[in-house]
Image (tube, rainbow, N blue to C red; front, top):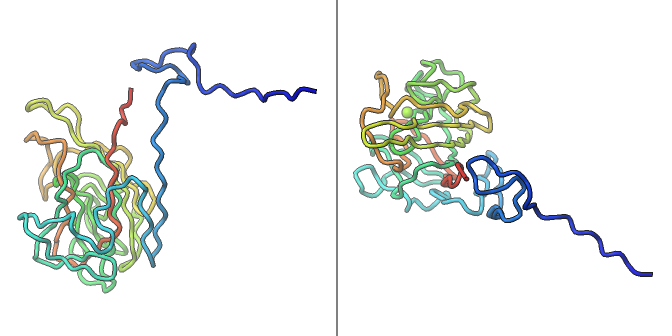
Length: 255
Ligand code: MG
């Protein structure tokens, strides 16, 4: 009795329709396999999770060597208990490396001791390309103008919902940012942001009106590079950050 060789399932085809605008067929056998990435783990209030295996780690709880002051000098923020904390009036900090389209993961906590109100409570910010602010604020039981709440695209779009944890608790942002594109002086496509706050969608592919400002209508007056630093804002409040990592987005318009 001969044993039957099990029939191998085909790995793709070479006689299927071409995908529009692409060099690949539907189920193309020759199409490259996706790169393997080991997923990270979730954070808890007690401990930050692990970043995905291919993430660029910008702050691991101790090492601030990825960061400089906005004047290019060493940062003067305080590293303590696995977090880096704003030291008021020492200035905002920024990454040495510049990034463009990316997925940025960052965790932050407003002071446990509630002081101030509206924009004066746990205010900081995460700036993509050093220009586009996702607001950080203690928005738990705190009324302020809607486009200034935490996770707002500041001065433009309030979050879809207020997903805030309480003061002192660790909160997460996952920001998927696409930089604007210019040709010469002309804007071709605006910046876009998709943001999850504590795992909850608060912006979905939101087109941004222009670089962030205060009490102004943002616009793309001045063309700029498609990359820039990640900036964390010193707004005078004792906000802490931990577990900051980034994955550049490559090939999302894959052909
Ligand atoms: Mg701010």
